[in-house]
Structure formats: structure tokens, C-alpha cells
Image (cartoon, rainbow, N blue to C red; front, side, top):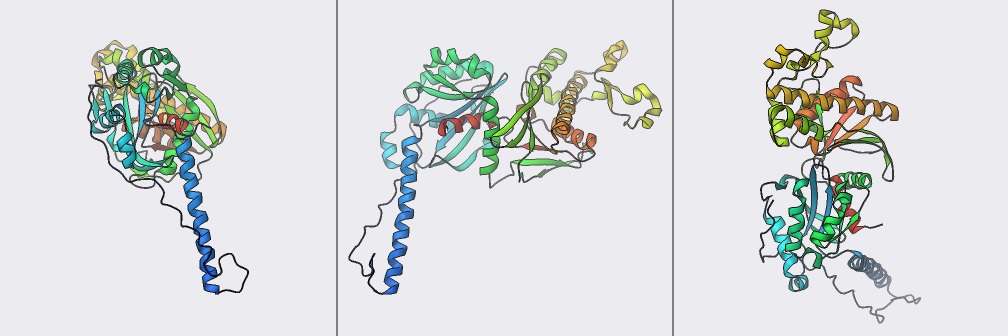
Length: 431
């Protein structure tokens, strides 16, 4: 990843300074007077007074924001086991005064992050997820979503050092396991202190916030209609009203499952170590691939039934009396115990079987948790689902089939960025 570009351009915007309040005119007939003056004038005076009160409240609110909000730039980071997720707020309402006072390195950071969609060979800005005209802490701007592999984090820290980030901030809000693992590296390499935030707090906070503010464009939440037909099931928007309770399944390198009963009342029910990291690691071993995208591409071209042992392989034609479809997996990778089977499968088949194995395991655990918690709505998030339509369809089918239509699998467009959004909110609203 290369973080070395700079430019002096800045973004123009409107002045946010509030206009002056109307001056009180105590000589106005009937103004705060008990005398029976003109009723219309008295009414107008009361209306003017109310407007003054409203304007004064708005002015004090803006003034309060100015006193409490941190200086730019505004970042939130989620440092996971596989990916670093970064959200950056780009202000679009920069005043003329701010434009004159803005230091060079702040301008350079803003221009570099927003004028590029790729950073070196591994850093990506997900332009399709950008949220425009968002208001945060009294400022209006765009929220950008950036990701890069965790093993490239030292390059990011060096970029921060080269652009003198520590002269603008001494603290960076971060969550995820890497906030602990790389804390000393941030201090020594970038002269920054990490303010570590609870991973699950940030996740829940980020999910609820994004869902609440996204009112235009594509729906944040969606599901798959007719999930039993994997080839023809269609993606449909879903309005996530009356959020609670819901089961939140975060699929990253591993999996965490949370039962959320309200904004401040949730618990981690369970989890599993078999997640996205397992899928990629096994695919690297079995197929020789090196990236998540390459593994998914191979899986899309394979056939898992060449690798797995199915119910019909064990029971023959008599499987129906057990109430199980013949194509149900009875033993993941079960056919690989036979030499002739191993010699006949392709790398694509192995990748597909790995994906199906991991996904089915997550679906099975999720269903049991939903039953135990008596929750009928399940929301899946996490970077394992990025560009992974196949797994989403499998999860949708598993929830629908095994619950006899009682469980609906829901998905969110911003997938793995919610922890980083929660970290940004922690920066802006420390309480």
C-alpha cells in the first residue's frame, strides 16, 4: 500500500457561522406591555420573541458543538485479524475562515484520501458505500469507507508519520483486537496514542447508527426472496423497523453472535472460530490461492457435492423416510477419504466445499442461538460477506429451511464497517 500522494486543493463550502440575532425593540407598541395596545402588534411581538428564543437555542447548540467536537481529521478504525476497516469524515461545509487557517498537512490528508479509490496495491476505498451529505456534530460532509489488509498496517502508520498526523491529533479511536496488538507500534511509529473502544459496543452502535441515518439511495437492509432456489432467488430491500430483539451475527476472521434487545442492552451469546479466516486459510492450503477474492472466484466455479458425502450417499433411495433431502450434506469433505474421489476433484470443487462447510456451520449455530433466545430476526454482517453472494444465499436458505420459514436472514450493505463507524462515534461522542 502506498500512502505518499499530496495536493494543495481544498474543498469549498458554506459558512456555518450563525446570522446575528434580531435586535430587541422595546419601543414597539405593545411589546411586553400590559396596556391594551393593538392586538395584531402584540401578537407579532410574541411571535418575534418566540423566533428569538428558537434562534438562540440553535445558536447555543452550534456553539456547544464547536466547544466539544474534536479537531479534524475525523477517523474511526476497526483493526481486525484479516482486514483494517477505516471510516473517514470529509467535511464539505468548510468556511472561508477555516480555509485560511487550515494547515497544509490536514489539507493534504483530506485530498489524498478522497481523490483516490485505491492506495497502492491493497488499499481500497469502497466508493459505492460512500454516504453523502451526512451531518455529524454540527458539520456536513461525506463519510468514506476504506479497507486494507492488516499486514499492511505498518505502511498506514508510516503514512501517518510522513503526513505529520500527530501534529493534528495525538489520539486515534480504534476498536478490534488489533487496537491492543498494535498499540505500541502506533506510539513508536506514528507518535499516536490509540483510544481503545469495546469491539461489541462499536459494532452495535455502528449498525444502529447507519440504519437510522440512511434515508436515501439503496436500502441498507435487504433479504433474499425465494431462498430455496439458489439460482433464481432475488435480493429485495427490507425496512428494519422495530429493531428489537434481533440476533446480530458478525462474520469476520471468526464469528461472534449477539442478542440485541435494545440500544444499550445486548449480550454475546456465543461464537465460533470457524469463520472467514478459516475459509481463506483452508483455501490457500487446498488450492494454492492467495486472496479472498481469488478463493471466492474458484468457489463460484466448483461443485461441493464432488467433495462432500450427502445423505443419499449414505441412505441410498430411502432417505426420504427420515425427512431429509437427499442432497443434504451428511459429512463435509466425507468423500475425500476415497483415493479415486480425491483424484477426480478440482481445486474449484475444494474451494466450493470449503465455503459451503464454513457457511453451513455458521447457519446451524445461528439457528440454535435464535431458538434459545426466542428471536425470529437474524442480521448477518462482517467482511466474510463482502462480494460473497453465494454464502448469503446459503445462509438465507438455511435460515428459511431449517426454521420452516420462521427465521428471516437479513443483510446490511456496509457489511464489515460497522465497528469502524462505532469507533468514529466514540471520537465524536465520548460519553
